Amino acid sequence: MSHVAKEKQKLLNRLKRLQGQIGAIERAVESDAECARVLQQATACRGALDGFIAEVIEDHIREHMVDQDAPRDDPRTQAAEELVTIVHSYLT
Image 1 (cartoon, one colour):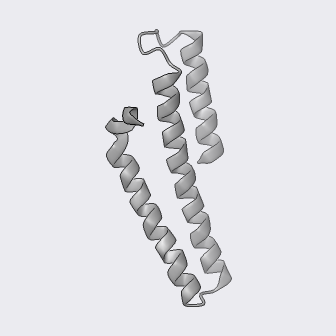
Image 2 (cartoon, rainbow, N blue to C red):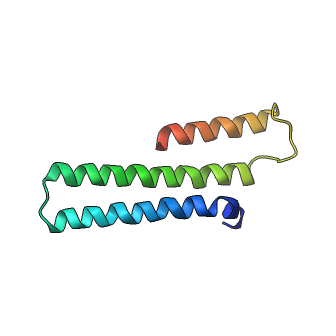
């Protein structure tokens, strides 16, 4: 994932937030919190993980599937951008 280096800090920040959310779920379960509270926290954590996955997929598509020298109106570039949009709409 060396191509992710330029986005590394953003990805690491997302992972740190995920760690905090997982810790909150663990504390909620340990303290016998209401099911609704635990589920809400778990859903938020899943959303954060989906956002992380979407970012990594987007970076992968742009790095490995798009010719950086191709014009923006190139059909392959447009298809890759459509794929990025689809991934984001599905995961976030």
